Image (cartoon, rainbow, N blue to C red):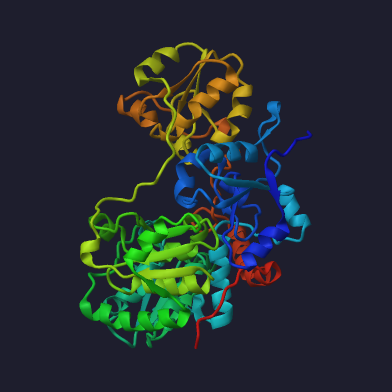
Length: 539
């Protein structure tokens, strides 16, 4: 189908040159996550059309940023010939973004121009982890070697650097949870014996490599090694994982902080991390010429108790692995905050090596004047008419009322309103086109937040009345009304989330091995791509 391009085009060569020069690049893939994971440019950020209003304001905070959109030739509404990128551009324009263009040729154009394609998610962080191991020659031990040490009763300690919820889902028997951003700060409290062999693990490779090398870079002298291939490697070696372990790092002592601070300060200087005052940060927050991200890298509990106004909570270890998600504008400024002088410097040392312009803000306890969890900025939602769960129950007595559920596919499988249709918001036109008998539509999601944005879309697409379910599906549940669970024809290929080979316990061995093989090949891909700019710190 022929299609005109009212928006300007940006070409592969322009974006490649901008990346190499360190300019700001917001290359946005508007497909669902599972589609994104099948292939994308290294520094593309996945921001699905379905959730644009819920995520874009934090991920691209400066409305002056040059945004380039692409998909893989996908349509929002085939009948009207409207592409998903065009729909996304219209939404961005309505939110005040000034500089929006389409990637010339979409993903196929990137390939044809010689651009490298990376699969999976969080490719920059994972590729960086492989680059770190390759250049630093980060020490590691295989599952068999760790098992032998355990059998010998050796003086070892296994530290799991993933999030605590991941650790509880599955972990190495005997391990304890020390998320990567906490590792250097708390090491002396967790492992007081300097002769203990430390073994750092994650689910795959990236976070264990970064955690291990963090301790080495920060000057800790006790023996440390990554568990090669993490819980995947452990499983492929035929070993059993533990579940619901609760081992956690102890309270921080001043001695541990003091020892870690010395190493973190020296490392930050070598890596080129710069310091910044809060006054300068405030000026940057009002500077429309650059994008600024302000992250608090402490624990969620510390952030909740008190934090700097305007700072988003992102644990340091997660920030390094998922930088593309939190800082979706490559080349932006990043400022990190803590209250101990260690965690921000450790995370910043890695971001500097990833070629980010990164600073550590000098703060005092009295600067942390806000409390509570971080709250995402969301776009203003249109005013729509809503109905109660009781009214919906009455309407469902005949076949003239359709229910569209925009929750995650996992939530839909777990619990849903009987007869509800699941779809991503970006695929609403295709789903409702097959339901001409419906005379009215009700839109819901878990809370009703995402659904509110789609009500007017559904009404416009169908020419029929559309309503928001008040309080979403949780409102239906609160009334004690009947639910459906399990498989549904709408869940055959959900696409909204990529099933990560390292996050579950029911993944096939072949999928795990394929994932590891991909990670091992990332250094070669980086060389072909030529835009990463990763660098070692000064000696």
